[in-house]
Length: 504
Image 1 (cartoon, one colour):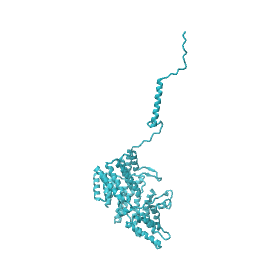
Image 2: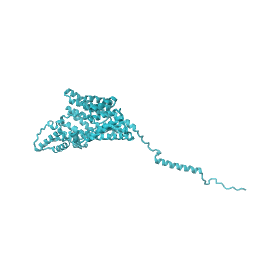
Image 3: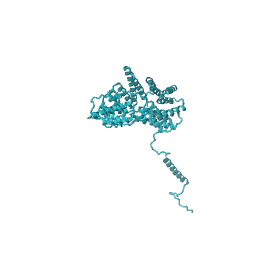
Image 4: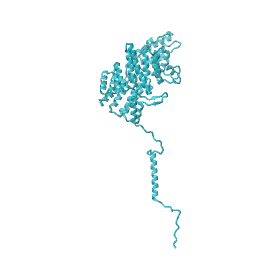
């Protein structure tokens, strides 16, 4: 009888399976590999938020060019200072941030930064913007040392940086009209323009900018030859007609300059600074005209250009005080001081902390014989102001919900601000009496002006007349009915009509 071993019906003996072990080893190694890839960022975790798509540099460049053509050079900001829409400068800055090696984008940014300086009202703001433009142009030249367009644009930027009023001391401007720093920048600009033409003698932009540089170097015949060549090669560029207008304007050919500005406007109809230049030339023609009716027509024509510039800005949502200041100057010259003051105040509503606009409004108040009111306004321009004083400086009774108090930093004494200084000092002196004596402040202002403008005979005469009034006040010998307009010290302010300044 055979007896068999009892089988394990419900339990199996432990036994190793080489295939199963191999499977687990592969699974573990795969898990380790997956974890490492996640840690290295090559594999993103599940359910992670989708990253925001990154724009290409080219799209920013296209946007910047479109915004420049539309006339939107600077960002648009609301009353709280928040950016509501970007301008061409910001778009190009984004382009070079996305692709910092794009020399063309750096050069175009520099060009737009330089042009945008024409929309700024103070020397400090213009100087800062032009320095930014030069930095951008330098970067472009480093990236593309043999690019003709880059050299042409750097020449243009260097030229605008060379403006004596921006880089020279007041003493140098008065005595020599220039300084070593200005001469060097202008020399460097000419060198770059020549280099651009050596690299590409068909570069129309280089010819145009070279003509502008030659005007600033007072080589007018060469400038005319250069701009004529540029017009022959390509008359479709706004820059060419703008420079042509500048060449004509510098030669006193204001009517022809207006025609050239009109051609530039036809190409770039949203460039508001072109309207301002054309309007300024109409104003100059009006001032020189001996015929009252023709003069009236020319002033009205200048106002049309300024108003069109303001309309374009309003349409674009750009709060630029420039057109309103130009309108204010024109009304001031026609004797309509109420309209002049209203437009200057409109400009201040856009930039209530801009000391230069306070200065312009103060001169308008003075011309309108609002002498007491001019003191508060000119003080903001010269010494600065804050709180309720800033609202009084705007010609208001007090601050309110629509006119908030601000802090205004006074302007440094310069060739462009000296008129505010000597007008402020002269009004303080003329309104001084032994019992209400403003002379201590007036003499402080005159002292500053004397140091910087001793070589200017007209300004020295203004200071001397103001000091004489204060001497009489100190002696108690002063009339109560001083005619400020007839005072030699301020005759120049009453009749002042500056020659249109080139866009720089």
